[in-house]
Length: 508
Image 1: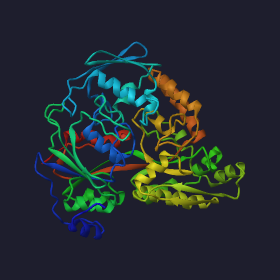
Image 2 (image 1 turned 135 degrees about the vertical axis):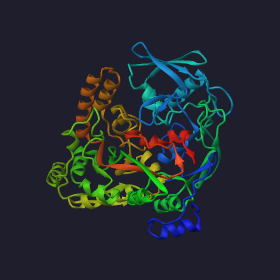
Image 3 (image 1 turned 180 degrees about the vertical axis):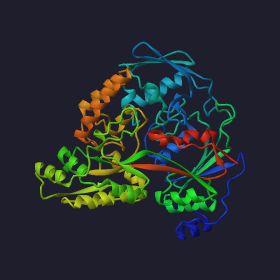
Image 4 (image 1 turned 90 degrees about the horizontal axis):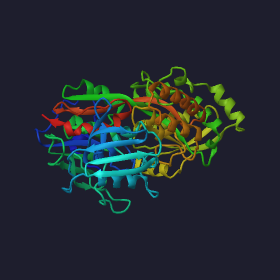
């Protein structure tokens, strides 16, 4: 159980208006106090276990590339990279040091990529790096990665926070953390409560990080998380509840940075249960009035998502396809009749009670499906339980709250390509061989116009197969004391990677 000051508890009990309390941002060089939405279920470097874990991992790890505040790829451990023939890429490493004092070398990079792609790997990006043909290390600061097929997206993949470079042989067993080269070092943790990191004096970027350290405390109760910020007990919080965004914006002592990009959706179990039938996945897709999710779960801070999550205004967006799953109760009933369950059926929906938007979304889906004869029982474990159940396929369908891996359409592959290995962010056992082929074709094509045509075809197939049903775009917010500077809310699909900016963050 997370402890909070008596003042914070009193604030929570006051329904969280403007409290009139003096927010206390600490002096420069001190430890920033960060309120996480949950304690990370795991901090294994290459696994995906939620946003809170990503935040911590982005403090202690770095990859060959990363993302900047515009969501674009930037150099990290690699200071430059170039194409080398149709399938090769050459990365030049900068002079950097691991937390154990040893230099980052080409051998460390080679070892890392081999661990991710190994047959027994549980890495989130195992499938992507299974496409590596060979890795050459001509000298300690040069890595040549040769793919089996042309791969325009390799620098983007390497920027993922799920792909940090770890010191060779520093992980023992599947539960090992490994030694990274990020701006902070792990100082200590109280399991289930808090994690502390300290400035790494040998970080490869001169003058960074600006903080002496960060103490991250889990406030699973979203109201207590806001109360702690308003009371001055923390400096920065993630997952600002949508019902409190307005109060934070109006508080002269605080600021809110928020952006759309994350979304809510539904995943399905295609290995067992009713949703093996694509017609029932489509019926569910047409039975939900999404504007009610936007209002009830996000207090209007979002918009309907009636298709695959491709952001409006992007090069890849198509207006007609974006409305494919518009609400149509009659069509939903017709699809159920075609599937042989005209009178309805019962099923269980996996979500979590730990995040209000997950629980509210599940309750609205439950209510709407009851209108077409689908009786839904909710399963609402804590976040760690939800991650475990999702990763093992122990559900019939589930609420998903996530984002694409990046702002390129290829970033959707981990969410909708059913031919990739299972994980907690993708439907279970829904094979999508045609989509898998189109993703491969898209990442092998370097011509932008041709890529656009490929992804249009892929989107059409994804809408018909429904391995992911979109529900709502949501505004994702961070709240902070006015004395916090340098922290950025990253755009679109890179929003969950905002902790990249913690190296630039300081306290006035």
